Image 1 (cartoon, chains in turn orange, green):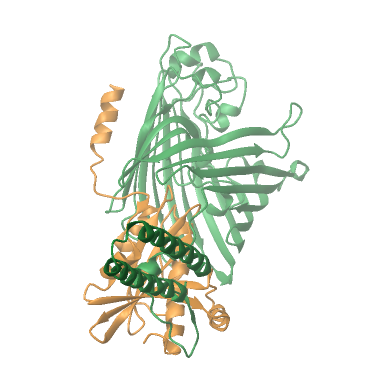
Image 2: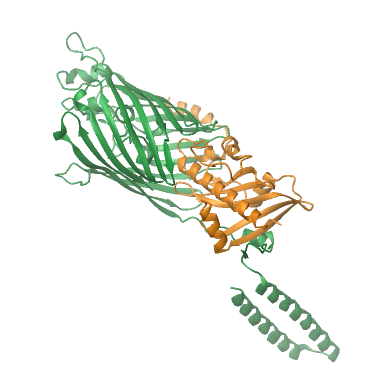
Length: 180
Length: 433
Protein backbone atom coordinates (compact mmCIF):
# COMPACT_ATOMS: atom_id res chain seq x y z
CA UNK A 1 0.00 0.00 0.00
CA UNK A 2 2.74 2.45 0.97
CA UNK A 3 4.84 1.62 -2.04
CA UNK A 4 1.77 1.84 -4.25
CA UNK A 5 1.04 5.33 -2.90
CA UNK A 6 4.61 6.39 -3.42
CA UNK A 7 4.56 5.09 -6.98
CA UNK A 8 1.42 7.07 -7.65
CA UNK A 9 2.98 10.20 -6.26
CA UNK A 10 6.09 9.77 -8.41
CA UNK A 11 3.98 9.23 -11.52
CA UNK A 12 2.58 12.75 -11.10
CA UNK A 13 6.02 14.25 -11.57
CA UNK A 14 6.08 14.51 -15.33
CA UNK A 15 9.25 16.20 -16.58
CA UNK A 16 8.73 19.74 -17.76
CA UNK A 17 10.69 21.95 -15.42
CA UNK A 18 14.26 22.57 -14.47
CA UNK A 19 16.27 22.30 -11.30
CA UNK A 20 19.73 23.34 -10.17
CA UNK A 21 21.80 23.53 -13.32
CA UNK A 22 23.62 25.59 -15.91
CA UNK A 23 20.98 26.70 -18.37
CA UNK A 24 22.54 29.13 -20.83
CA UNK A 25 25.92 30.51 -21.79
CA UNK A 26 26.28 34.27 -21.93
CA UNK A 27 26.32 34.14 -25.72
CA UNK A 28 23.15 32.02 -25.84
CA UNK A 29 21.47 34.50 -23.48
CA UNK A 30 22.44 37.39 -25.78
CA UNK A 31 20.85 35.58 -28.70
CA UNK A 32 17.66 35.05 -26.66
CA UNK A 33 17.56 38.69 -25.60
CA UNK A 34 18.35 40.09 -29.07
CA UNK A 35 17.11 37.49 -31.57
CA UNK A 36 17.12 40.11 -34.36
CA UNK A 37 20.84 40.80 -33.93
CA UNK A 38 23.03 39.90 -36.90
CA UNK A 39 26.24 40.08 -34.94
CA UNK A 40 27.31 39.92 -31.30
CA UNK A 41 30.48 41.78 -30.42
CA UNK A 42 32.05 40.60 -27.18
CA UNK A 43 34.00 43.12 -25.17
CA UNK A 44 36.00 42.59 -22.04
CA UNK A 45 35.99 45.65 -19.81
CA UNK A 46 38.32 46.42 -16.96
CA UNK A 47 36.69 49.33 -15.17
CA UNK A 48 39.05 52.19 -14.29
CA UNK A 49 39.04 53.29 -10.62
CA UNK A 50 37.44 56.64 -11.51
CA UNK A 51 34.50 54.90 -13.21
CA UNK A 52 34.22 52.39 -10.39
CA UNK A 53 33.98 55.30 -7.99
CA UNK A 54 31.21 56.89 -10.06
CA UNK A 55 29.32 53.60 -10.03
CA UNK A 56 29.62 53.42 -6.23
CA UNK A 57 28.32 56.99 -5.97
CA UNK A 58 25.29 55.87 -7.98
CA UNK A 59 24.61 53.29 -5.26
CA UNK A 60 25.79 50.28 -7.26
CA UNK A 61 29.00 49.00 -5.75
CA UNK A 62 30.65 46.63 -8.24
CA UNK A 63 32.07 43.41 -6.76
CA UNK A 64 34.75 43.32 -9.46
CA UNK A 65 36.35 45.69 -11.92
CA UNK A 66 35.99 43.15 -14.69
CA UNK A 67 32.85 43.06 -16.87
CA UNK A 68 31.91 40.88 -19.80
CA UNK A 69 29.78 42.80 -22.28
CA UNK A 70 28.21 41.84 -25.61
CA UNK A 71 27.02 44.43 -28.08
CA UNK A 72 24.13 43.36 -30.32
CA UNK A 73 24.43 44.79 -33.85
CA UNK A 74 22.13 44.74 -36.85
CA UNK A 75 24.26 46.12 -39.65
CA UNK A 76 25.65 49.37 -38.25
CA UNK A 77 22.76 49.83 -35.82
CA UNK A 78 23.46 49.10 -32.16
CA UNK A 79 20.35 47.28 -30.90
CA UNK A 80 21.52 47.03 -27.34
CA UNK A 81 23.94 45.47 -24.95
CA UNK A 82 24.03 42.33 -22.83
CA UNK A 83 26.05 42.12 -19.61
CA UNK A 84 26.47 38.90 -17.67
CA UNK A 85 27.44 38.65 -14.02
CA UNK A 86 27.19 36.47 -10.92
CA UNK A 87 25.69 37.11 -7.49
CA UNK A 88 25.60 34.95 -4.39
CA UNK A 89 22.22 33.34 -3.67
CA UNK A 90 22.14 31.80 -0.21
CA UNK A 91 25.08 29.46 -0.60
CA UNK A 92 25.85 29.35 -4.30
CA UNK A 93 26.59 31.68 -7.19
CA UNK A 94 23.74 32.60 -9.51
CA UNK A 95 24.78 33.43 -13.06
CA UNK A 96 22.55 35.89 -14.92
CA UNK A 97 22.54 38.19 -17.93
CA UNK A 98 20.76 41.50 -18.47
CA UNK A 99 19.82 42.80 -21.91
CA UNK A 100 19.42 46.56 -22.32
CA UNK A 101 17.98 48.17 -25.44
CA UNK A 102 19.70 51.14 -27.05
CA UNK A 103 17.35 53.51 -25.16
CA UNK A 104 18.45 52.07 -21.80
CA UNK A 105 15.29 50.04 -21.13
CA UNK A 106 15.71 46.51 -19.86
CA UNK A 107 15.01 44.08 -22.70
CA UNK A 108 15.08 41.06 -20.38
CA UNK A 109 16.88 39.09 -17.70
CA UNK A 110 18.09 35.53 -18.24
CA UNK A 111 19.28 33.14 -15.52
CA UNK A 112 22.44 31.37 -16.70
CA UNK A 113 23.08 29.10 -13.71
CA UNK A 114 21.18 28.33 -10.51
CA UNK A 115 22.29 25.70 -8.03
CA UNK A 116 20.51 26.47 -4.75
CA UNK A 117 18.26 23.77 -3.26
CA UNK A 118 15.37 26.24 -3.08
CA UNK A 119 14.32 29.25 -5.09
CA UNK A 120 14.75 27.99 -8.65
CA UNK A 121 11.50 29.89 -9.33
CA UNK A 122 13.53 33.01 -10.13
CA UNK A 123 13.91 31.35 -13.53
CA UNK A 124 10.18 31.62 -14.10
CA UNK A 125 9.34 34.07 -16.92
CA UNK A 126 6.71 35.69 -14.68
CA UNK A 127 9.33 36.73 -12.14
CA UNK A 128 11.89 37.91 -14.72
CA UNK A 129 9.25 39.87 -16.65
CA UNK A 130 9.04 42.28 -13.72
CA UNK A 131 12.27 43.89 -14.95
CA UNK A 132 11.26 44.33 -18.59
CA UNK A 133 10.88 47.92 -19.80
CA UNK A 134 12.39 49.45 -16.68
CA UNK A 135 15.25 51.96 -16.69
CA UNK A 136 17.72 53.20 -14.13
CA UNK A 137 14.95 55.51 -12.86
CA UNK A 138 13.12 52.47 -11.39
CA UNK A 139 13.96 51.20 -7.87
CA UNK A 140 14.64 47.67 -9.21
CA UNK A 141 14.38 46.44 -5.67
CA UNK A 142 12.57 43.59 -3.96
CA UNK A 143 9.81 44.99 -1.76
CA UNK A 144 9.42 48.01 -4.01
CA UNK A 145 8.80 47.34 -7.71
CA UNK A 146 10.03 43.71 -7.72
CA UNK A 147 7.92 41.08 -5.95
CA UNK A 148 9.68 38.51 -3.82
CA UNK A 149 9.52 34.73 -4.12
CA UNK A 150 8.72 33.15 -0.78
CA UNK A 151 11.59 30.91 0.27
CA UNK A 152 14.03 32.56 -2.14
CA UNK A 153 14.37 36.00 -0.57
CA UNK A 154 18.14 36.20 -0.81
CA UNK A 155 18.23 34.99 -4.41
CA UNK A 156 15.55 37.51 -5.45
CA UNK A 157 17.21 40.39 -3.59
CA UNK A 158 20.69 39.67 -4.88
CA UNK A 159 19.68 39.17 -8.50
CA UNK A 160 17.65 42.42 -8.32
CA UNK A 161 20.67 44.19 -6.87
CA UNK A 162 22.81 42.72 -9.65
CA UNK A 163 20.39 43.88 -12.36
CA UNK A 164 20.31 47.39 -10.86
CA UNK A 165 24.11 47.48 -10.85
CA UNK A 166 24.31 46.53 -14.52
CA UNK A 167 21.64 49.07 -15.52
CA UNK A 168 23.64 51.82 -13.81
CA UNK A 169 26.90 50.57 -15.33
CA UNK A 170 25.52 50.73 -18.85
CA UNK A 171 23.92 54.14 -18.24
CA UNK A 172 27.33 55.37 -17.11
CA UNK A 173 29.04 53.80 -20.11
CA UNK A 174 26.52 55.45 -22.41
CA UNK A 175 27.12 58.84 -20.78
CA UNK A 176 30.80 58.52 -21.54
CA UNK A 177 30.21 57.44 -25.12
CA UNK A 178 31.65 53.98 -24.60
CA UNK A 179 28.99 51.99 -26.44
CA UNK A 180 30.27 52.80 -29.91
CA UNK B 1 51.93 35.05 -18.60
CA UNK B 2 52.70 35.98 -22.26
CA UNK B 3 56.43 36.06 -21.32
CA UNK B 4 56.26 32.45 -20.13
CA UNK B 5 54.54 31.44 -23.32
CA UNK B 6 57.15 33.31 -25.37
CA UNK B 7 60.00 31.58 -23.52
CA UNK B 8 58.45 28.18 -24.12
CA UNK B 9 57.97 29.04 -27.78
CA UNK B 10 61.64 30.12 -28.21
CA UNK B 11 62.82 26.88 -26.60
CA UNK B 12 60.60 24.89 -28.92
CA UNK B 13 61.94 26.83 -31.91
CA UNK B 14 65.56 26.23 -30.90
CA UNK B 15 64.89 22.52 -30.42
CA UNK B 16 63.23 22.37 -33.79
CA UNK B 17 66.20 24.03 -35.51
CA UNK B 18 68.74 21.79 -33.77
CA UNK B 19 66.80 18.66 -34.67
CA UNK B 20 66.36 19.76 -38.26
CA UNK B 21 70.07 20.59 -38.62
CA UNK B 22 71.04 17.15 -37.34
CA UNK B 23 68.66 15.53 -39.76
CA UNK B 24 70.10 17.54 -42.62
CA UNK B 25 73.67 16.48 -41.82
CA UNK B 26 72.67 12.84 -41.96
CA UNK B 27 70.28 12.82 -44.89
CA UNK B 28 71.11 15.57 -47.40
CA UNK B 29 71.68 14.04 -50.72
CA UNK B 30 72.29 17.13 -52.79
CA UNK B 31 72.72 20.89 -52.58
CA UNK B 32 69.23 21.40 -54.08
CA UNK B 33 67.71 19.27 -51.35
CA UNK B 34 69.63 21.30 -48.75
CA UNK B 35 68.31 24.60 -50.15
CA UNK B 36 64.77 23.26 -50.21
CA UNK B 37 65.02 22.28 -46.53
CA UNK B 38 66.45 25.69 -45.58
CA UNK B 39 63.56 27.44 -47.33
CA UNK B 40 61.08 25.20 -45.56
CA UNK B 41 62.65 26.04 -42.21
CA UNK B 42 62.50 29.73 -43.03
CA UNK B 43 58.75 29.46 -43.68
CA UNK B 44 58.23 27.60 -40.40
CA UNK B 45 60.33 30.19 -38.58
CA UNK B 46 58.19 33.01 -39.91
CA UNK B 47 55.02 31.18 -38.83
CA UNK B 48 56.39 30.75 -35.32
CA UNK B 49 57.42 34.41 -35.16
CA UNK B 50 53.91 35.46 -36.12
CA UNK B 51 52.41 33.17 -33.48
CA UNK B 52 54.82 34.56 -30.87
CA UNK B 53 53.89 38.14 -31.75
CA UNK B 54 50.17 37.32 -31.53
CA UNK B 55 50.56 35.77 -28.08
CA UNK B 56 52.57 38.73 -26.79
CA UNK B 57 50.02 41.26 -28.02
CA UNK B 58 46.90 39.54 -26.66
CA UNK B 59 45.56 41.53 -23.64
CA UNK B 60 43.52 39.87 -20.82
CA UNK B 61 41.08 42.77 -20.64
CA UNK B 62 41.17 46.32 -21.88
CA UNK B 63 41.08 49.11 -19.30
CA UNK B 64 37.90 51.09 -19.76
CA UNK B 65 38.53 54.84 -19.67
CA UNK B 66 35.93 57.54 -20.05
CA UNK B 67 37.36 58.84 -23.31
CA UNK B 68 38.67 55.56 -24.65
CA UNK B 69 36.34 52.84 -25.92
CA UNK B 70 37.69 49.43 -25.11
CA UNK B 71 39.10 47.37 -27.97
CA UNK B 72 37.12 44.28 -28.75
CA UNK B 73 38.90 40.99 -28.18
CA UNK B 74 37.40 37.98 -29.88
CA UNK B 75 34.45 36.19 -28.29
CA UNK B 76 36.43 33.09 -27.38
CA UNK B 77 38.94 35.14 -25.41
CA UNK B 78 36.17 36.95 -23.56
CA UNK B 79 34.44 33.71 -22.67
CA UNK B 80 37.54 32.50 -20.86
CA UNK B 81 37.51 35.40 -18.43
CA UNK B 82 34.41 34.82 -16.30
CA UNK B 83 34.19 35.39 -12.56
CA UNK B 84 35.98 32.90 -10.35
CA UNK B 85 34.21 29.63 -9.64
CA UNK B 86 32.30 29.34 -6.35
CA UNK B 87 34.13 27.55 -3.52
CA UNK B 88 33.21 23.90 -3.00
CA UNK B 89 32.64 24.34 0.74
CA UNK B 90 30.52 27.11 2.25
CA UNK B 91 30.18 27.76 5.99
CA UNK B 92 26.80 28.99 7.21
CA UNK B 93 25.26 29.83 10.54
CA UNK B 94 22.49 31.53 12.44
CA UNK B 95 21.70 32.43 16.03
CA UNK B 96 18.91 33.82 18.19
CA UNK B 97 19.31 35.57 21.55
CA UNK B 98 15.98 36.30 23.21
CA UNK B 99 14.73 38.16 26.27
CA UNK B 100 11.23 37.34 27.56
CA UNK B 101 9.62 39.41 30.30
CA UNK B 102 6.17 38.31 31.54
CA UNK B 103 4.10 41.42 32.25
CA UNK B 104 2.42 40.01 35.36
CA UNK B 105 5.28 37.88 36.68
CA UNK B 106 8.43 39.84 35.99
CA UNK B 107 10.37 37.60 38.39
CA UNK B 108 10.21 35.02 35.61
CA UNK B 109 11.97 37.24 33.09
CA UNK B 110 14.56 35.25 31.19
CA UNK B 111 17.40 35.89 28.78
CA UNK B 112 18.41 32.95 26.65
CA UNK B 113 20.79 32.15 23.87
CA UNK B 114 17.97 30.27 22.26
CA UNK B 115 20.09 28.64 19.64
CA UNK B 116 23.35 28.99 17.79
CA UNK B 117 23.77 26.93 14.65
CA UNK B 118 26.80 26.29 12.51
CA UNK B 119 26.56 24.52 9.21
CA UNK B 120 28.43 23.73 6.09
CA UNK B 121 27.54 22.89 2.55
CA UNK B 122 30.11 21.01 0.56
CA UNK B 123 29.75 20.39 -3.15
CA UNK B 124 31.49 17.21 -4.30
CA UNK B 125 30.78 17.95 -7.95
CA UNK B 126 28.27 19.75 -10.15
CA UNK B 127 25.52 17.32 -9.18
CA UNK B 128 26.18 16.26 -5.62
CA UNK B 129 26.44 18.19 -2.37
CA UNK B 130 26.05 17.58 1.35
CA UNK B 131 24.34 19.96 3.80
CA UNK B 132 24.87 19.79 7.57
CA UNK B 133 23.80 21.97 10.51
CA UNK B 134 24.86 21.55 14.13
CA UNK B 135 22.80 23.32 16.76
CA UNK B 136 23.44 24.21 20.40
CA UNK B 137 20.39 25.38 22.35
CA UNK B 138 20.35 27.47 25.55
CA UNK B 139 23.98 28.45 25.68
CA UNK B 140 25.54 25.55 27.59
CA UNK B 141 24.95 21.87 27.10
CA UNK B 142 25.99 19.56 29.94
CA UNK B 143 24.42 17.14 32.41
CA UNK B 144 23.62 20.00 34.81
CA UNK B 145 22.60 22.61 32.21
CA UNK B 146 19.43 23.03 30.18
CA UNK B 147 21.11 23.11 26.79
CA UNK B 148 21.23 20.45 24.14
CA UNK B 149 23.33 19.76 21.09
CA UNK B 150 21.56 18.47 18.01
CA UNK B 151 22.18 17.84 14.35
CA UNK B 152 19.46 19.82 12.62
CA UNK B 153 20.18 18.69 9.08
CA UNK B 154 22.58 16.19 7.53
CA UNK B 155 21.71 15.14 4.02
CA UNK B 156 23.13 14.47 0.60
CA UNK B 157 21.44 16.07 -2.37
CA UNK B 158 21.98 14.75 -5.87
CA UNK B 159 20.72 16.31 -9.06
CA UNK B 160 19.38 13.39 -11.03
CA UNK B 161 18.76 15.44 -14.17
CA UNK B 162 17.83 19.06 -14.88
CA UNK B 163 14.30 18.32 -13.62
CA UNK B 164 14.70 16.37 -10.41
CA UNK B 165 16.87 16.12 -7.34
CA UNK B 166 17.05 13.43 -4.70
CA UNK B 167 17.76 14.13 -1.05
CA UNK B 168 18.81 11.43 1.43
CA UNK B 169 19.63 11.68 5.11
CA UNK B 170 18.24 13.86 7.91
CA UNK B 171 16.28 16.74 6.37
CA UNK B 172 13.74 19.38 7.36
CA UNK B 173 10.20 18.35 6.52
CA UNK B 174 8.58 20.44 3.77
CA UNK B 175 5.68 21.64 5.93
CA UNK B 176 4.18 25.08 6.39
CA UNK B 177 5.97 28.37 5.84
CA UNK B 178 8.58 28.29 8.60
CA UNK B 179 10.01 24.81 9.01
CA UNK B 180 12.39 24.92 6.05
CA UNK B 181 13.02 28.68 6.46
CA UNK B 182 13.41 29.00 10.21
CA UNK B 183 16.35 31.39 10.48
CA UNK B 184 15.55 34.47 12.62
CA UNK B 185 15.92 36.80 9.65
CA UNK B 186 13.09 34.91 7.90
CA UNK B 187 10.23 35.38 10.39
CA UNK B 188 8.55 38.23 12.25
CA UNK B 189 8.62 38.38 16.01
CA UNK B 190 11.18 37.39 18.62
CA UNK B 191 9.72 33.89 18.94
CA UNK B 192 8.56 31.64 16.13
CA UNK B 193 4.76 31.60 15.79
CA UNK B 194 2.90 29.18 18.07
CA UNK B 195 1.07 27.24 15.35
CA UNK B 196 4.33 26.32 13.64
CA UNK B 197 5.86 25.37 16.99
CA UNK B 198 3.07 23.57 18.87
CA UNK B 199 1.07 22.02 16.01
CA UNK B 200 3.89 21.71 13.44
CA UNK B 201 6.87 20.83 15.65
CA UNK B 202 9.43 23.17 14.06
CA UNK B 203 12.26 22.63 13.56
CA UNK B 204 10.88 19.26 12.46
CA UNK B 205 13.24 16.89 10.73
CA UNK B 206 13.09 13.22 9.81
CA UNK B 207 15.45 10.80 8.15
CA UNK B 208 14.67 9.30 4.77
CA UNK B 209 14.55 9.93 1.05
CA UNK B 210 12.95 12.85 -0.71
CA UNK B 211 12.38 13.66 -4.38
CA UNK B 212 12.21 17.32 -5.36
CA UNK B 213 10.96 18.77 -8.62
CA UNK B 214 10.48 22.29 -9.94
CA UNK B 215 8.26 23.03 -12.94
CA UNK B 216 8.17 25.91 -15.38
CA UNK B 217 4.60 26.74 -14.36
CA UNK B 218 5.83 27.68 -10.86
CA UNK B 219 4.83 24.42 -9.18
CA UNK B 220 7.35 22.66 -6.97
CA UNK B 221 6.72 19.22 -5.55
CA UNK B 222 8.45 17.33 -2.78
CA UNK B 223 7.61 13.77 -1.82
CA UNK B 224 9.29 10.97 0.03
CA UNK B 225 9.48 8.32 2.69
CA UNK B 226 10.84 9.01 6.17
CA UNK B 227 11.07 7.98 9.79
CA UNK B 228 7.98 8.67 11.88
CA UNK B 229 7.08 9.60 15.48
CA UNK B 230 7.33 7.33 18.51
CA UNK B 231 4.12 7.35 20.58
CA UNK B 232 5.81 5.18 23.21
CA UNK B 233 7.65 8.35 24.30
CA UNK B 234 4.38 9.98 25.42
CA UNK B 235 4.68 10.89 29.11
CA UNK B 236 1.22 11.35 30.65
CA UNK B 237 2.79 12.82 33.79
CA UNK B 238 4.40 15.63 31.86
CA UNK B 239 2.83 18.76 30.39
CA UNK B 240 5.06 18.48 27.33
CA UNK B 241 2.35 16.74 25.30
CA UNK B 242 -0.07 19.56 26.08
CA UNK B 243 2.41 22.13 24.83
CA UNK B 244 3.18 20.33 21.57
CA UNK B 245 1.77 16.84 20.93
CA UNK B 246 4.22 16.05 18.15
CA UNK B 247 7.11 17.91 19.78
CA UNK B 248 6.79 15.45 22.69
CA UNK B 249 7.19 12.36 20.55
CA UNK B 250 9.48 13.36 17.68
CA UNK B 251 12.61 11.28 17.27
CA UNK B 252 15.06 13.56 15.43
CA UNK B 253 16.94 10.50 14.23
CA UNK B 254 18.48 9.89 17.65
CA UNK B 255 18.52 6.09 17.48
CA UNK B 256 15.03 6.50 16.06
CA UNK B 257 12.71 3.52 16.16
CA UNK B 258 12.21 2.79 12.51
CA UNK B 259 9.77 -0.09 12.14
CA UNK B 260 7.04 2.34 11.12
CA UNK B 261 7.87 4.66 8.25
CA UNK B 262 5.85 7.58 6.96
CA UNK B 263 4.98 9.07 3.58
CA UNK B 264 4.96 12.79 3.02
CA UNK B 265 4.37 15.23 0.21
CA UNK B 266 4.24 18.96 -0.38
CA UNK B 267 3.10 21.14 -3.25
CA UNK B 268 3.94 24.82 -3.52
CA UNK B 269 2.96 27.12 -6.38
CA UNK B 270 4.80 30.37 -7.03
CA UNK B 271 3.55 31.05 -10.56
CA UNK B 272 2.64 34.68 -9.83
CA UNK B 273 5.49 36.83 -8.49
CA UNK B 274 4.97 37.57 -4.82
CA UNK B 275 2.39 34.83 -4.29
CA UNK B 276 2.88 31.43 -2.69
CA UNK B 277 0.09 28.89 -2.31
CA UNK B 278 0.97 25.57 -0.78
CA UNK B 279 -0.10 22.47 1.09
CA UNK B 280 1.58 19.49 2.70
CA UNK B 281 0.64 16.14 4.16
CA UNK B 282 2.44 13.62 6.37
CA UNK B 283 1.10 10.25 7.48
CA UNK B 284 2.69 7.31 9.23
CA UNK B 285 2.23 4.66 11.91
CA UNK B 286 3.83 5.62 15.21
CA UNK B 287 3.83 2.84 17.79
CA UNK B 288 6.82 1.18 16.15
CA UNK B 289 5.58 -2.36 17.01
CA UNK B 290 6.47 -1.68 20.65
CA UNK B 291 2.86 -2.39 21.64
CA UNK B 292 -0.01 -4.42 20.24
CA UNK B 293 -1.85 -1.24 19.33
CA UNK B 294 -1.27 0.43 15.99
CA UNK B 295 -1.75 4.16 15.74
CA UNK B 296 -1.39 6.48 12.76
CA UNK B 297 -0.30 10.08 13.01
CA UNK B 298 -1.32 12.40 10.21
CA UNK B 299 -0.53 16.09 9.83
CA UNK B 300 -1.53 18.40 7.00
CA UNK B 301 -1.41 22.10 6.36
CA UNK B 302 -2.42 24.69 3.82
CA UNK B 303 -0.57 27.98 3.61
CA UNK B 304 -0.39 31.18 1.59
CA UNK B 305 1.93 34.14 1.45
CA UNK B 306 1.52 37.29 -0.61
CA UNK B 307 4.11 40.05 -0.77
CA UNK B 308 2.72 42.92 -2.87
CA UNK B 309 5.15 45.85 -2.75
CA UNK B 310 5.99 46.67 0.87
CA UNK B 311 3.38 44.30 2.32
CA UNK B 312 4.06 40.79 3.56
CA UNK B 313 0.82 38.89 4.25
CA UNK B 314 0.61 35.25 5.27
CA UNK B 315 -1.90 32.70 6.50
CA UNK B 316 -1.63 29.07 7.56
CA UNK B 317 -3.86 26.31 8.89
CA UNK B 318 -2.47 23.03 10.23
CA UNK B 319 -4.24 20.00 11.67
CA UNK B 320 -2.96 16.78 13.18
CA UNK B 321 -4.76 13.57 14.12
CA UNK B 322 -3.75 10.44 16.01
CA UNK B 323 -5.77 7.24 15.60
CA UNK B 324 -6.57 4.56 18.18
CA UNK B 325 -5.98 6.95 21.07
CA UNK B 326 -8.75 5.32 23.14
CA UNK B 327 -6.70 2.14 23.40
CA UNK B 328 -3.45 4.06 23.90
CA UNK B 329 -4.93 6.29 26.63
CA UNK B 330 -6.64 3.52 28.64
CA UNK B 331 -3.55 2.77 30.76
CA UNK B 332 -2.76 6.51 31.06
CA UNK B 333 -6.07 7.60 32.63
CA UNK B 334 -5.41 9.90 35.59
CA UNK B 335 -2.29 11.38 34.03
CA UNK B 336 -1.81 15.10 33.49
CA UNK B 337 -1.94 14.89 29.72
CA UNK B 338 -3.48 12.16 27.62
CA UNK B 339 -2.90 11.69 23.92
CA UNK B 340 -5.28 13.90 21.92
CA UNK B 341 -7.21 12.56 18.94
CA UNK B 342 -6.82 15.87 17.11
CA UNK B 343 -5.04 19.20 17.41
CA UNK B 344 -4.99 22.20 15.11
CA UNK B 345 -4.29 25.89 14.70
CA UNK B 346 -4.18 28.78 12.26
CA UNK B 347 -2.75 32.27 12.03
CA UNK B 348 -2.96 35.42 9.98
CA UNK B 349 -0.02 37.77 9.80
CA UNK B 350 0.49 41.15 8.23
CA UNK B 351 3.77 43.07 7.99
CA UNK B 352 4.61 46.34 6.27
CA UNK B 353 8.03 47.79 5.44
CA UNK B 354 7.53 51.22 6.99
CA UNK B 355 10.99 52.73 6.64
CA UNK B 356 14.20 51.95 4.81
CA UNK B 357 17.55 53.66 4.60
CA UNK B 358 20.53 51.83 3.14
CA UNK B 359 20.56 48.42 4.79
CA UNK B 360 18.34 49.63 7.68
CA UNK B 361 14.75 48.47 7.40
CA UNK B 362 11.91 48.79 9.88
CA UNK B 363 8.97 46.40 9.45
CA UNK B 364 6.12 46.48 11.98
CA UNK B 365 3.84 43.46 12.03
CA UNK B 366 0.73 42.01 13.66
CA UNK B 367 -0.13 38.33 14.02
CA UNK B 368 -3.33 36.68 15.21
CA UNK B 369 -3.14 33.00 16.16
CA UNK B 370 -5.61 30.41 17.38
CA UNK B 371 -4.49 26.96 18.33
CA UNK B 372 -5.63 23.97 20.32
CA UNK B 373 -3.13 21.25 21.18
CA UNK B 374 -5.95 18.94 22.37
CA UNK B 375 -8.94 19.76 20.20
CA UNK B 376 -10.54 16.40 20.94
CA UNK B 377 -10.02 13.14 22.80
CA UNK B 378 -11.30 9.70 21.94
CA UNK B 379 -14.18 8.48 24.11
CA UNK B 380 -12.92 6.59 27.16
CA UNK B 381 -16.20 6.32 29.04
CA UNK B 382 -18.17 8.63 31.27
CA UNK B 383 -15.99 10.53 33.69
CA UNK B 384 -12.81 9.24 32.14
CA UNK B 385 -12.65 11.13 28.83
CA UNK B 386 -10.67 14.34 29.31
CA UNK B 387 -12.30 17.59 28.27
CA UNK B 388 -10.95 19.19 25.14
CA UNK B 389 -8.44 21.93 25.90
CA UNK B 390 -9.58 25.54 25.52
CA UNK B 391 -8.53 27.19 22.28
CA UNK B 392 -5.70 29.63 22.94
CA UNK B 393 -5.80 32.92 21.06
CA UNK B 394 -2.70 35.05 20.88
CA UNK B 395 -2.10 38.46 19.37
CA UNK B 396 1.47 39.56 18.73
CA UNK B 397 2.33 43.17 17.87
CA UNK B 398 5.89 44.20 17.18
CA UNK B 399 8.54 45.10 14.67
CA UNK B 400 11.63 43.69 13.01
CA UNK B 401 14.50 46.09 12.50
CA UNK B 402 16.99 44.88 9.92
CA UNK B 403 20.40 46.29 10.69
CA UNK B 404 22.14 44.57 7.84
CA UNK B 405 20.97 41.97 5.37
CA UNK B 406 21.73 39.14 7.81
CA UNK B 407 21.21 40.87 11.18
CA UNK B 408 17.84 41.62 12.74
CA UNK B 409 16.70 43.18 16.03
CA UNK B 410 13.16 42.41 17.16
CA UNK B 411 10.68 43.63 19.75
CA UNK B 412 7.11 42.56 20.35
CA UNK B 413 4.27 42.29 22.81
CA UNK B 414 2.20 39.10 23.13
CA UNK B 415 -1.23 38.83 24.74
CA UNK B 416 -2.83 35.47 25.51
CA UNK B 417 -6.62 35.24 25.76
CA UNK B 418 -6.60 32.04 27.89
CA UNK B 419 -3.28 31.95 29.74
CA UNK B 420 -3.45 35.64 30.63
CA UNK B 421 -0.51 35.34 33.03
CA UNK B 422 1.65 34.51 30.02
CA UNK B 423 1.32 37.99 28.51
CA UNK B 424 4.85 39.09 27.82
CA UNK B 425 7.25 41.55 26.24
CA UNK B 426 10.04 40.15 24.09
CA UNK B 427 13.31 41.47 22.75
CA UNK B 428 15.63 39.61 20.45
CA UNK B 429 18.61 39.77 18.18
CA UNK B 430 19.35 37.26 15.47
CA UNK B 431 21.63 36.76 12.54
CA UNK B 432 22.02 34.44 9.64
CA UNK B 433 24.64 33.97 6.95
